[in-house]
Length: 467
Image (cartoon, rainbow, N blue to C red; front, side):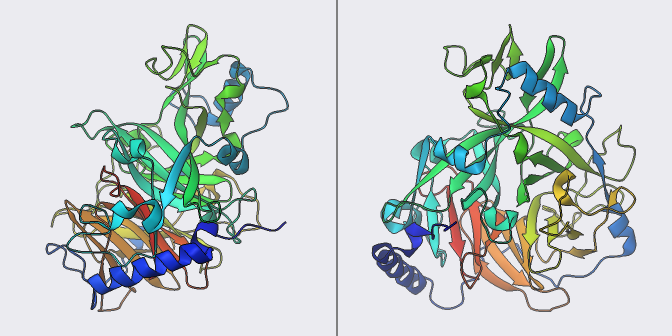
């Protein structure tokens, strides 16, 4: 099979426009760009003790709040939905083929990103290589906020899933415009490629759901997670959560082989007048999803090993007496086998600057379950835990021993580069409202991608830099 190149980024006409834009942006940020955050003083990373490694250990929990296993509930949900017997799940190619959203890329598709009000412009311009803006509705909503980001270059060694190359990034829905409490979450799959010269990228939202068993049978609700970090590995989405609902604190695992198209269900209501207002799940014999055509049920949760699984423990960033908080997630494919990273958001001197842990994963060609974290005696243990070099960490990844961290604090944002034990920490500007990080290995030089969360056309974007 011949896979399409990154067409919107390699067409001759597009390359010429992007080159001009890059020259202009680099000229505006002449010299060594510094992270714009005067309160963030970086310090060297230090390896922490074995006791910290034990505190970071994780145990698998697939029993839902109704005391039923999630796999059993997913099977029952499929039966209750009346899905065709021949239907297994919707794969990535089929999902993008049904896309009803369009994003635009680069200085032609989205010039607003480089302007004074944009995520990459203003007084602290970012040396960005490429960027993609969502449609006006998703760019401006003040109820849904993007957080974690990953993609097919995390999922497989060749960066291809079902013949496609795509990004996957998560959102959380706020309780209100002023209340940041998460009440729902979703994942968006966005085509990395675009028709030659069109700058248009297909994308589709998928609602993350919690299978439940109610008084009228199996149902589902939303997953009230912050979705702060994403890693897509094999067919799994690993989602870091440090939200206020501590029963979800840890690493949530979603199996993409359970992705369900509700349009195939005779019992799902996607289009009636009440479809957008009904609560999620089963009501009067019909299933409602507030119009979301695709849902992805929870498979299980890797929980901190502190305390009994039956009593989920509240996380406390930086405090060695409590389970750590899982704010972001990243993948390191330069190690063998690949490594999963997760770290903390810290805001005060009492919290310090937080910790980042590394966990080994199953190799690429080895079948795996439960999100592919390697275990010993049923427990996933980190190979190392380090102090983070900066506060306000929103994302972290590593490649061949070098760590990259993004920070966002109010209107200030930065990207920091260092190695464990090194005294130097290099500072760079980052997009306003920058979040999680994702290595895209599509070129000889890996490109670092992130997503920005602030509402506004040109402010809420995916963007890449060559580190």
